[in-house]
Image (cartoon, rainbow, N blue to C red):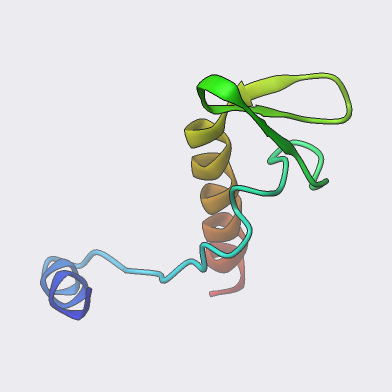
Length: 71
């Protein structure tokens, strides 16, 4: 990771480390605990379902957005 970050920064690309903790257990839309379903679905108690990988990606993006604003 440090090598990738170093190479990116050599090209002027800022690199942020985003913690992945609980990104698969939390709904990206409502920040509540989700239930994993068969076929990689994440089902929110508020009634919607999303592919688990997409939910994780959106949670990581939210974490990154929070860091970019404070940097």
